[in-house]
Image (cartoon, rainbow, N blue to C red):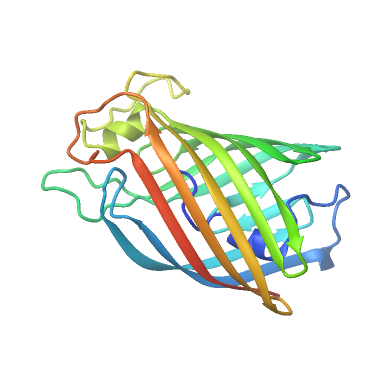
Length: 249
């Protein structure tokens, strides 16, 4: 699950979904800081939940560079009208709470790859492909459609639909099927035990004062594909919810 319930909090709180096409000047850096409380599963496949707190840190330079604790670091190295593409680096958090005895504990992962995005009049279509350099050491990808904007003078709403994929090294490591084995050919491959999910998300931001917003996110994903025999997979629904505050500087 590339995106948890803290996806796009700062962006929705402080910006419209589309950025300007021209390169920004240095004085157009924007920085959003905040904190949210999140309810999330103990681990993927768990019907039990826990509440934790997360920081929100988001910075961007026009439409060229975006840095976020949640959505990673992205550089639009190539831009042509509504289309942009370039490298991306992300951090994947692993949920390891409440694991049964003997289950593997997958480490958090740093993933590096590329993205391509197309801006349309009604939203943005984006795809990503990444390789985990730590953790499960496999490949993952996403395809998403994001839309939203100002619906009232002090209220912004946004939504996303997405499908996600990770290779069998992710499912083997995460669901305790067996330890992932390093492959000689380190290229994306589709196997029977790959991990698939489909989900949607609703984001809202209510301006409380100049530069300060109350933000909330409700997100749900459904684990698809093969019926793994894993004690961790007690439910295929992954629901998360967050609420907190963001300040723009």
